[in-house]
Image (cartoon, rainbow, N blue to C red; front, side, top):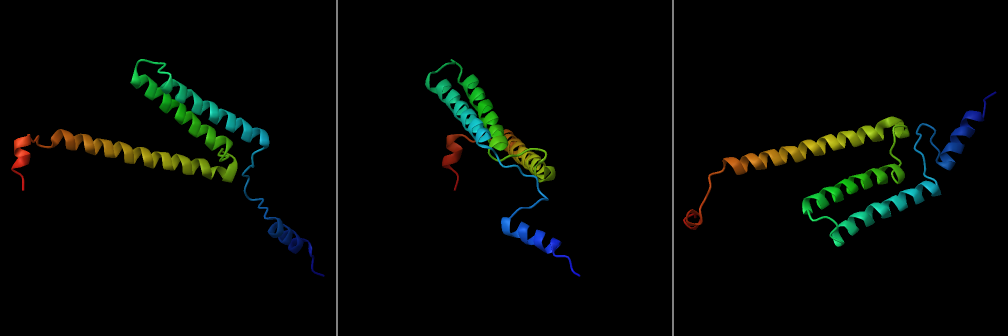
Length: 133
C-alpha cells in the first residue's frame, strides 16, 4: 500500500506557497509602525537642522545629515527589508556585506585615480587652451 501523506504535504505546501527551508520573517504591524516612526523622525531632524540653520558650520551640518541618513538606511533594512543574521540562512547579510565592500572599493579607487590624475596632470593656462586644436 502506498502512503498518501508525502504527496498531500507537498500539495499543501504548493497550494499555500509555504517554504519551510527559509526563515524570512514577516513584520508585524508594530514593527512596521516602529520603522515608520523612526523613519519620520530621522527625516525630520536633518530637515530641521538645515532649514533652521542650527549650526554655523555647514561641514558639521553635512556630517550630521549623512550620519542620520546612514542610521535611516539601517532602520529601513531592519524594519522593512527584515535583514538579519537568521533570514535566508545569513545570506542576506553576506550579500549586503559583499555589496558594501565592492562599493567601497569602487568609490575609493575612483577617488584615488581622480586625485592622482589631478596631481600629475600638466597645468594649463588660458593662453595654452586657446592654442589647442
